[in-house]
Length: 387
Ligand SMILES: Nc1ncnc2c1ncn2[C@@H]1O[C@@H]2COP(=O)(O)O[C@H]2[C@H]1O
Image (cartoon, rainbow, N blue to C red):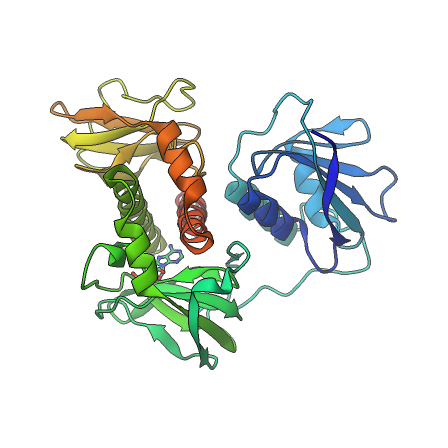
């Protein structure tokens, strides 16, 4: 493969977090070159299939160097697709890196290189302030946008508990995603252009209950998606792929519920068979992708503060790494425990990867976006639990 520069630009317009998301959504392998007149040597971030695996600046390498690039507020970048010749030293998921990088920057732990200072922290949906990252989706495929809708700041787009199956892609502006608990609206995430609103479970159901409330944080333009076309495409997928989509949707709902509870008080795990050996240990490199046919599995993150249950899985849910998605759970950052009656069958990851590659742009973006939401919400959950 010949080295090929596929993306160049100015860091004032696309920051490192956005670049990582962009390169991540294209699944590219190559090197991101950074140049800043405020730093002596150029920086490099090495991407393997869309994930940063190493970074270098002068003689220094690794995750700390990658975080330092979040402080490069001015400069130029170029990304070239090329084969990699580095030993991966970074194991964190894209979203964990972005969230941690932004947090370190906000906390003043990363030196800002350039004339631009800190951006003010955006307010949260409840007006109490605090930092919520904005999650952007992959580049929008306008093929499936059938209409546009405008919302003004503070307007509710969907309300938790209401029924509805419409789906949108954010074209412009930012949307606050909140969980409602009694009178309280608990902010979970902000989502920006390219992100989707509306659960993918609606593909398999005539009726769906909204799992959260979405409120326009500023002037928002949404693209209404061609649900009949997307539902038709969904129906044409293999049952394994449909189950994968539904299972991701359930994971997102569970971690979101956990994150909302975590804001009230951290919930330690109950009733999880952690006394037994895990069926997938954290970091286990030989983990396969499995589907549950009976019993339950529990995804558990072990932290200094104690074990944290991320989700409880049941029949038809997948367990183990999905090679083409990064949700930041097992095996790289969490372990899996199973009940005694747990039965699983192995999934054909090659066939699933081929099916993923054949998806329409919009459906693939929705799947990727859901994975990013899971990973981002899980990172928020970790942060809450640490406090
Ligand atoms: N943790 C989350 N991160 C991002 N978006 C979410 C999250 N939880 C819920 N949502 C969105 O909020 C929407 C509420 O309605 P739905 O359940 O149809 O679909 C939901 C998702 O699109």
